[in-house]
Image 1: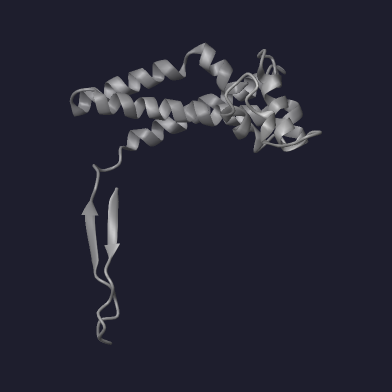
Image 2 (image 1 turned 180 degrees about the horizontal axis):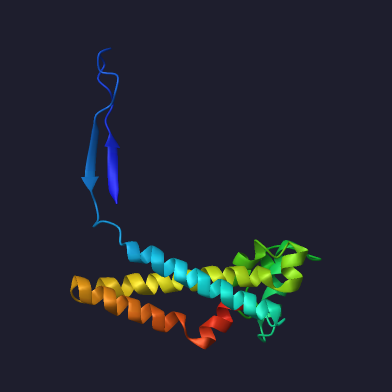
Length: 164
């Protein structure tokens, strides 16, 4: 990541353009992070498609209840933030509330699946970066990070949670 600092132009008419100073703040970007994110997104979309085709998005015990709470926050008899915090922590319901106002997404369960898909991709990428930072050498750390996040991404239980 490079930080570009623009200094003010001089007061003279001759210097119209500002001087630019680039400061290197971090190592260059790791291209594998994008690949890991894309692979995790494809796995998540495939899982959601599978569970959607088999009508199992709302098959998890608490998935409908989570959607119902998020729907009550957005539209209900007494809508508002007071609907949160009964049993579960409120973050999933707040994120699902952004999409649960749409009847199609709410009734099919895709409002909750979109949040689950995003969280699955984020957790896979963050796990890759975490292993990459805390493992040894450059080539060894990349192999360790790829194997760690691939082991995380292909677990059947996480595939079910990412798709429902």
